Length: 332
Image (cartoon, rainbow, N blue to C red; front, side, top):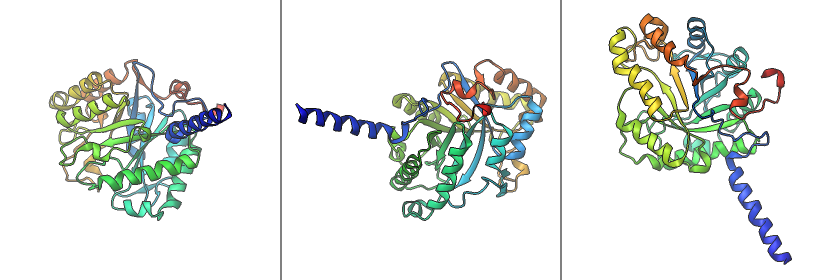
């Protein structure tokens, strides 16, 4: 009898450890920060000036702010840093917009082996501490666009590095992070699931929505459904179309974009509201101007869409809606 009881305790402990690998949370949330049924997180990025200008020109603060840092340097956290793609300043966004979630792209191209060898542990510690101290839901895209040819991630090493980072943050008792497996959602010779870290390591499935190449987008959306994971449009911009010619832009990009959100039950959208041609890193590459406020027709249509009740914005009630309880009640 005692032996059976001991075995039962061991089984329960093992199950708890496995489930708690990523999803444990002592403050009652589900660690995925999923909006209620019928609601969508509105996230805007992807650098300081673009975000501030959006808020000023559009007249509302989105539910989330999209920012970037890297495993290599952990830059742009407490001091602004501009690599040619606009200034990143993560702590500024936290201080400036207290009732918003953070959506963070974590760059780690060409250093997967170094990550696994502990070379960047100090940077990961810095990033992890910032996430914990942000005191809000943080959606972390580890090695975003993992299947993009521009990132050339080896699938096995990518999965191992993803595990390494998630395990390290788990060991740091970081309970306000949701892990986003973010696909480029375009053609790849390698089966996309070769990069999959496993159900216990993925909270959300993310995609990049740059064009209406629906084959890739739909295939990743299908994976999200099969895995029962919420779908996030982790990066979106009308690449090669822009906002200059409003009728063309609405027909070719914005209306299909809004339709995709509805058809695929997208739970978060992350729009990059910037003039790509004004950024040194992207100038001359054909990305064009994606600022919705730059064209009055596009601005009007954008507001018609995002002012619908289903789109969540900054609010003192936002964190509670997402199942997150702030440690500092004043921050709510």
